[in-house]
Length: 95
Image (cartoon, one colour):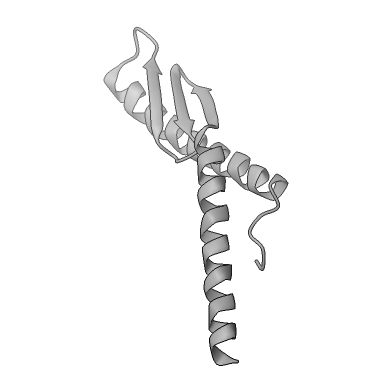
């Protein structure tokens, strides 16, 4: 009886890993764009910056401040989108 329970747990873990991988693949295809103060940042569902554009004529100081804010906003926006997508996909069972 113990072994059957252990195998059921292993199957559940395998199923969870499979579902997590599927979600990761779906979410990786998503992207979020934020434009703020002359900076445009695009981040994918893996929270990787895929593109940064800087408007011409910006000072170094302005670029540094705007870049930080734009990236942070893009990360937050991407996290919200990913949470919504995961919820739409049914989330993780048992959580």
